Amino acid sequence: MLVDMHLHESTYSLDSHINLEQIVTIARQKGLDAVCITDHDSMGLREYAAEYAKKVDFPIFVGVEYYSLQGDITAWGIDTFPDHRIDAQIFIDQVNAAGGFCVSCHPFRNNKRGLEENLRRVRGLHGVEVLNGSADQEANRTALRFCRELGLKAIGASDAHTTEQIGKYVTWLPEKVTTLADFIAQLRRCDTRPAIWNGTGYDVVDAF
Ligand SMILES: [Zn+2]
Picture 1 (cartoon, rainbow, N blue to C red):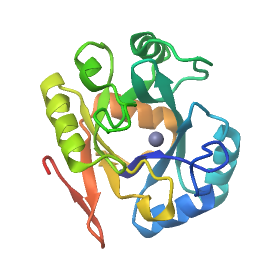
Picture 2 (picture 1 turned 120 degrees about the vertical axis):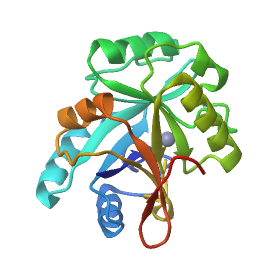
Picture 3 (picture 1 turned 90 degrees about the vertical axis):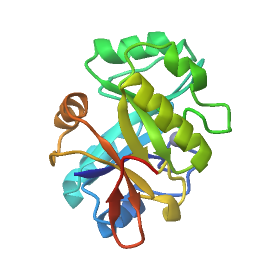
């Protein structure tokens, strides 16, 4: 399955210009099988997203983009998250204690919100965004190098805040799943690969 694993919806991400209906419509047009909503320090959309996913019969997995003291981490499978910035390691430990999944997003993006060298220090992180739609290619290539060095899962995600960005980069997974629990189980169990929108479909890649 192909999933865009990092999207911002305008209700709870105030810097986003896209709503859930636009996200699902464009994701479907591009042939995606599911999307993730990872708003900034919010999982407020959870209830509405569950309702909407059912109504339109399209899987929407709500996680969070949590701003730890060392940088942003996207996470799924947690019920709550700290209401203030805490150490990345403590947050990662909380995600693992809940049986969740967590990813270092845009680790080398030039906005100083990535984990950068802390990637080597933290333990228990599952994946790294090696293709993030808001980071430049050099930052993404550095992320890929770290991802391989650390043996973490390679994640692709648009980090979209506008319609044009939706589905720019996505993640390939071997099986189609529809529930968050199955999604997390598969993420933890299987190898993932990033994929790039080529204008008509997706190229699943190992390098770029
Ligand atoms: Zn983001």
